[in-house]
Length: 196
Image (cartoon, rainbow, N blue to C red; front, side, top):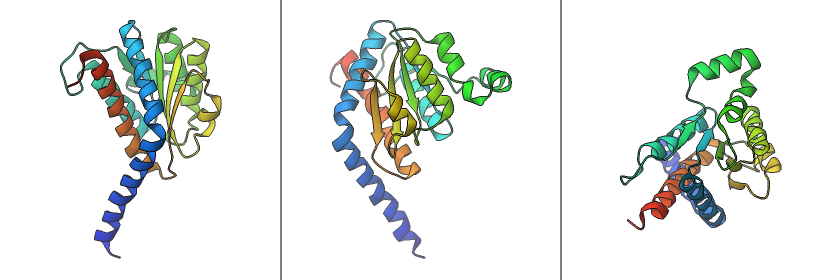
């Protein structure tokens, strides 16, 4: 086995995934930036959730909003729903793991807020239930998925935005997701602060 060739193939595959995603997702990505900006400009908040690597991405995204991205600015209101271990374990124990995000959206989400729902497969039951509650509260959903979008893609409304990475491998989808999230942060900062 040529490990150098294998490592090189990862770079090439990632580049191809990014190239294809750029062609398909730049327009809905720009629309997502406008929605997120309007939310924070009107004192709304951004809730984000995901499992595993997607949980790390949700937490990373919210950290960039509350802290800073590349430039200093006021903190923006955001909550990663997968970070409070007491809530996760209490709700998971009392209601089941599928309810850990929906209970938080029900408690914290309001009309005018946005849910950023991240699931590489588009089929995570707890993310699906969070989206359902967000819709009940007239929240807009920005969904980051991959493959064919899964059940999440099928349940989104016309007012939601679906950023579905056109790739089958989880690692490639996750790599593109972090680029999408960084692009969202940069877009929000550009609208708030102007061109760098």
